Image 1 (cartoon, each protein chain N blue to C red):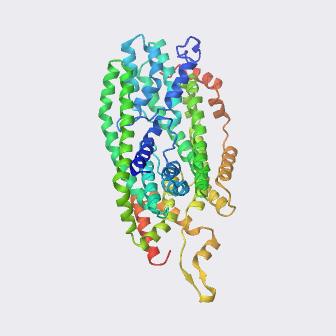
Image 2 (image 1 turned 180 degrees about the vertical axis):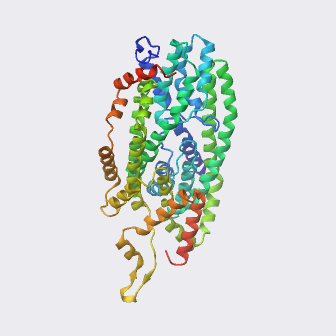
Image 3 (image 1 turned 90 degrees about the vertical axis):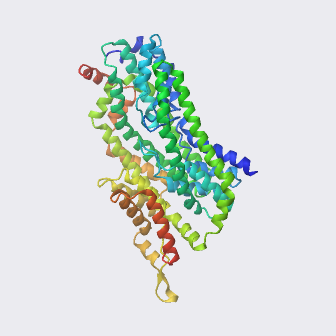
Length: 264
Length: 276
């Protein structure tokens, strides 16, 4: 496949990184899905799958939650996987490439999202004129512009970068490459620590130990651990009233009537 | 405030609620740093707003402006929010005494706590289980990795998208107040954390490998320090590394970027020195 066609296909994957938010926030814009697709485009699905596992472990804790905008795992996993597959390097080399690309891609997107605060004024004007279609138009314009920016990032990086990046990587001394391979086992600890830091406290850290023991000593697969966790949660908490609340709320709306009187 | 429960004469039908569910899928098409995903929210409930206020351009314009205010929450509960907001708009139409600003007050006050619960549930719990399973298959080169990942995350997500618009519409606000007061929100948060941490614990064991290359003893009975440590507790060094990073992140507030570069540099140096 010519470099141009590859660049277009990879670029479309880049655009999808944004468009995922317009088709249901499916979270398919993550390394574990993108890297295998890059592998498919470049004719090495197997390496793509391995890269997906490696990069997903690195970016595991890096998700946009609330107002925290995480480093762009999507764009960076596309480019890092593509460069690694085309250069024939170890999968661990992707880790070294991925982080700077993610930071760069995120800062470009930050500029765009700041600019969209201004285009929101156009939407405000449409709202004043009771023109809801105008608001939709602004939304789609911003959405496709964002997707196009991501297309361009990947497209241009592949057109101009693939040979030079590969040439640079080939000059890296063996000591560093070996170190990077070893770092492949260390870096996921950061992603996992980031993730744990959002939910771990003095009371519940023991459950992390439980999961660890289950996997390290008993060799339980993740699904088994998740099911054990589910049982623990169900035993520990009584969700009876929650279920009622989700299932049509006859009791809840009764309770609602009592509150109604003094609510507003 | 009675039309929530007796919506037989309601303007909004099942079909309208289904449309809200479909349009929820575009929930983050455009984002900005001032009001985040407010435009997709107007896209979501726009047709329903038009149906309620269409005969009164001024009131319709006011409703559009109302919902162009700040909106940010877990994607999977946007459908529920849509149903709830439409119920309140309908209420406003039927009850001229209602203060329109209370609609946004309710939206804003529910956004935070509910996103806290559902971010934990979807991003820190279901996603982690999906990633854990996905990574373990993909690492063996199996195409099942990404496929299982996508399914495990998205089946619950779609249940939320298509099952909760009508719940939000029926609930009105009362049930939510109830939920908050009964402390159920904290319960759900705690439960999601426990499940998440168990899976993370498993992933700490499976995905981190930190080994020492150091050996000692006479040449015929060369002993590896690594084997001894793993005999005490399997993966002891990896486990320790995880807690080192956790401590640096949480207690020392070290920037993640520095951690990544620091870890890379330290590993390369330790490998070069023959320690790792």
